[in-house]
Each structure stands twice: as structure tokens, then as C-alpha cells.
Length: 399
Ligand code: LMR
Image (spheres, rainbow, N blue to C red):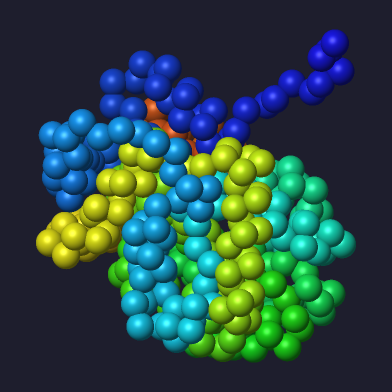
């Protein structure tokens, strides 16, 4: 009955992460998946999260269904975190927010919603992209295209080209944008570039979908939300997916949010109903445990302050690894320009390594980097950075 179905080739990120775990190389290094590891190579359990969990574990709490839109306290906290507590879009009730099943769940709900609202619209996604962006929107019936973003020659942004392409899109096209820590390249727009882009989106009547999976890993929790707040200031109608997978180290709890910035409070109220309807037909309601813990951390002033420091520590460790990779490579391979390690931001760096070089890294050195050449920096630590730069220098020398 199902023989006609194509074999699933597997996800390029999850598949290679799985292969890494099968490899028996004694000093292997996993730079595949966007997971934050601490300097000991472990996924941290943040003390803020642990404290919230311990408090809850001491009570026997029933597990009712949450409402379709999730916990009210969670949704309020998402709004404050994403938009800033005093933002006029919140004060005027123009934002409808739901608790979503991770950032991916937010993208799926948003994709279904957009397709129902504008069935003829198509989406433009950065080139290169997180592969799943294409899959999610195609899965929702939305045709996907790319806009120019990254220039392999300079390892930086093709901003003028990007702007020129967005300027001529059909009105009501969807545009997927990363407000910070672009996945996979680590190349972001500057604040000035966002301020140049936003009027183009507005004039053209485009509908931005901001995917913020790494808030706090770029420059800071508020700084990383700059583009979202500027867009809301400019009066645009747009969507924001946010995730607690990385900044709360909460991957498997599937906690995220979807916010739709609307034209008025009435529109936002109606939008919440639409979001409930989409959620009901996909998964009915979001998970209880992760929702409560996230809400506890974000709503308790002491736990929140602790969490802000924990995010700053994770961000700082990533920056240290970037710097060490750059400095060690400069010393080992003076002719190779490794400055992109420190110019790009967030979890990922785009190396431009070729497939034969990536295979050599895997086979000779046990260093796993996905086929696009994207490195997940937090896989580096003081124990393996030297092995990593030795391995890089080895394959780069070989050409
Ligand atoms: C990544 O890009 O590695 C992460 O966002 C994990 C994922 O879901 O792909």
C-alpha cells in the first residue's frame, strides 16, 4: 500500500548527529546540531530551571489540558521578552501570542495560519536557509523561494542584493527573516540595515515572519530583539516565532511562542481565536510541564535575574570559543583568513569547507560538521579546541 512513498533521506542535521554518536574515534568532536554544550561537553541544566522544577516537584499537581493557546502567564512573559515590557504594541493590545511546541511548532502554526489567510501568497527564505524552513512551509502548502543573503566570497551579507530582490516581490508575500544569530551562517543584519529594510517591507506590503530561535546568544536578550521591536514601532503586521530550546536549555520540553502583531486590539483578539483553531487541529494544546517551568523562571524576579546571567554566561562561552578558534587557526595557518569565526555571531559559523574537506574531517579526525559546512560552535570547548584547529589546519593545508 505504501510502496509508492519515497524513502525519507533523513534530516541532514539529525542524521549526522546520529552518525557522530556511532563513531568510535577517541577524540571525536560534535559540531553538527544547534545544541548548547558547556565547557565539559554537557547540555546544562540551568540552576534557574532546576530551582523551578524542584519547587514544583514537591507538590502533587494534577496535569489538566492547558488551553489551546497555552498558559496565560507564559504568554505574557513571552510578550515581555520578545517586545520589551513597555512596548506600545503590547500596551495597545495589538499582539496575539500563544505558547507553542518549540520554535518549530510556532513556525508550523504560523505557516498554516498564513496559508489559510492568503492562499495565493508564497514565501521567500534566505539563501542559505535552515532546511526545515522550506519543509515546514511546503508542508503547509506554501510555495517556497529564496532571496540572496550570504556571499561565500566575502563570508558576509549581500545586503544590497537582498534589498533589491525584496523590493520587487508581489504584495502580501511572506518573508522569513532571522532577527539574530542567523542559522546557518551566523551573519546578521546590522541595526542600520534593519532600519533600511523595514520600510521596504512596509512599502511593498510584505508579511515578515521573524524566526528567533537564539534570543540572547548574539548580543543580549534585548539587543537580539532589536529588529522585532523596530518592526513593531514601524507599525508593520508580522509574525514572530521564539524558542526556549537554546536559551533555557530546554530542547526536549518543546517550549516556544508564536506572536502575531496585528493592526488593532480587536484584530489581535480575533487572531487569537484563529490561532486556537489552528492549534486545535494540529495538537490541541501545548505541554504542561515545560510551560509551567518556563513561566516560573520568567515570572519569578529572582529566577529571572538568575536566568539572564545564565544566558550571558552561555553567550560569553560561545564568544570565547570563537576567539580561540580564530587565534589558533591564525597561528597554525597564517595564510588562511579565519576572521569569520569572530565576525559571525551566535551558535553557528559558516566555514565554506568543501565536501571532500568535510569528509576528511570526519574520517581522519572524528570532527563532525554538517554538509553545508556549518559549525555549531558550542560543540567546542577548552578540552577539544586544539584538536579541532589541528584538524582544520590539516584539511585546509591539503586544499
Ligand atoms: C539546528 O539547526 O541544528 C537546530 O535548530 C536543531 C534543529 O532542529 O535543526
